[in-house]
Image (tube, rainbow, N blue to C red; front, side, top):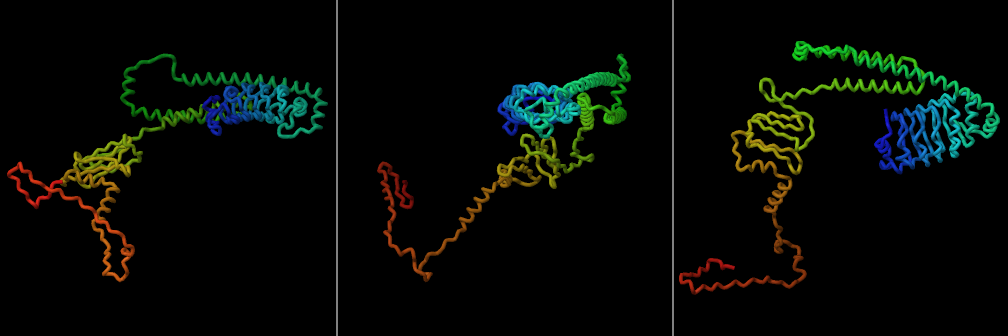
Length: 446
């Protein structure tokens, strides 16, 4: 069964950024709602409210919606029109296919002076004699009834015949109320019998005594595999019983009443719960993947997985490598034997790939340079290429004697500036050191 909650209203208020206090339109149809509540406290500014195809049995908690203009309560379990006097701006009311038998309850709508459209088709009161004339004469503000416009001549005639029509409507209401009381008693009695039958089924096989047979307990614990076949048989018998009960329920004739609608909903919920239980039992635990064959040979295994560094476990063996990601293996048999102790696993910072370096057995590796070369990035390679190009760069010749065209560089004469040279400091030998010898080939100290 459904209930009107704040979370339900917020989920249906996406067009208003999930803000409910300023909500003007709300749709809560097909939510199996049994009671109309909380809306008048949380959504005071509502103008349009859709509540069709639910299980609402009474109109209540909407009197504070002063701005409400359109209320749709079609396909519910309403039996009486009430508690709508506070909806001062109500202009359209849809009560199609409900269980309204008290047609005189429409007099409560006389306070809704802005009411222009009313829908009552599909209700028991719509089959009463002079139903339309009674409604037209009772509600002078109406312009449309059940989708048909009310003509001025129709209203005049209904007002003239009102004194004769009203007692007839009252008698038909009494008959309907007596029938409804009998149907309610039958439905209540039937519901009590079903509850008793369910209690008996739940307690079937239990006679109120407890038995403690140790041998039976031990044998049951030792032979779990033998109990699987009876369990399967029991499940099959339960399925047959449920299917038979389902067919019996749907083939059984019943009257269209609020109780029958509730009974149908309870039956559907029961079937849904049974299916959920069966589906849970059918769920089997997946057997673990075989990574090593019976003869000790490693197998190639690959299982779909999501890449997450915190959940990666790399295991390097001499003949194979295994990567476990979230419990799912990727195993690869190696063509040559490798050294697990010298292997390394890193994630590339540029591509994000997992790089596993595994040196072969018998191969000499100096200083880990091989691993460094394998991990070179694209930027390092581009730098090496530019350096090699700069070394082999060829310069153009600008010798005027080898070409017939004039030298453009000497057209404008500019003053040539010779760069100043720093004077070389004179080295004066120190007279204090008698062994000092001045060697001209040695460059001066600056």
